[in-house]
Image (tube, rainbow, N blue to C red; front, side):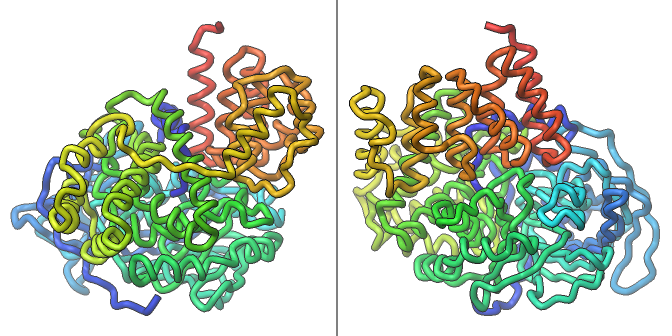
Length: 639
């Protein structure tokens, strides 16, 4: 998933308030690893030490009128404990009709089940009592219209305006809101699906989508590589396809297809670069699904079909590092997965590091360094607000916490910084083969930090004695903050931006005279992030007249500009700000403005007005974040 720090801290309260390459042979599901404290998943009711899902078979019907998926999930089971006679699954707001079991192709027989009381975070525990260890269990069910992992958009909320749209977001623990299963990244399974819909919509899943599939309302999918539940994905709408290469292409609404194909034309080159560094792409196809602007994240790395926000279609390919990030997950995250959410850095930290290597290979070290600096500035800002226990990569047991809390800059940027530290100490000639070996030897497995630390010790540290100490590794993994010995990245182009900003702030130059003609998105972001918290409104007028920030179509710039205008009392930006907040649902882009507005009573009232208008088009995850922010602001006495 693309980064969205520092607003992960809003999620826990928000979701509680809501209630929420070559064709490779499919590998067999891995046997259950030995259990340890780090492999215990506090965010799942499942008991994978006793029984595991090996394969999932879905039969679902998409009903836009009822806003529900209805059908059945057939689970093929791998029993590990000879004495076990229960199957415990995760659900959230599912209506269960029947539960049946059988061996082989024998007749299905109904079995008893109990659906536990609803927990606002974890959902409801589904306990299935089995008289013997059946090979298959089939659950007939339907989802709630308010399922936390699904968003249903009316035609008016789409680009075409004629056909409705639906898409899923399963990470971190939202898969349980549309499929009853073991909703933990420690369990991997293959799947197949048959999905029916009205014939005017195209249905896609995180499986073998056929670019030439007919739009007929009856679709079939398989995923032969075992995946964790959070990578289960579905989408349905007015979707068309155009290729980028033989194994990569774009799905999106017709109005967006040409711009998207142009913007992401380097996707095949990205795949080839990553293969040269870390081994073959093992998922056959890599396609992009460009979602409506309500998608709450930048991207989601669903295998074979990354979900992508349209907010990165800037026209100049300046924000395609997000594609590099989602592609990198095909190695770090999808191929080698964190066993629990307390080791999220094994997913996002590795991916952020690989993303930067892809950017460097394709667009040069200068651009890669600028992006490193921006992300690390964001990390430093977040560390000022995050409690020390949450600043470590190897998070402790987190029972009662929301797993989304682990999806901040620490996991992404501190994790990537640690890997860059190892790269610089050992040199790329040693570190690159080491990282490739990590992916190869743990392919299609779920792992924990103890496994990585042991692998690092035997495969790199012991083979190059005296380069890195155990104490240094432990400081990265288990100590808060950033080690004093962390490598520093500098950008000459940012030094020029610093000089330009200072000359304007010192009134030695007017904004129109600054030499900005060749600035990229990264430089504009850095320019705005280096401004004082607020300035006189007339100074923002000058910036706006010179650079036309208000109304910009670049979400990364808008994310920085609109909060700046709020803090500075530049009310002329309000109409465009309102339109931006109502049009975009990507949390990373809009939450800074909501947060700035909520700091004053007048701004909070304006935020509530905008939110009331925008809410019908927001994803439940975004809605939860805004609701939590507004509730917190109302509960805090005005200064």
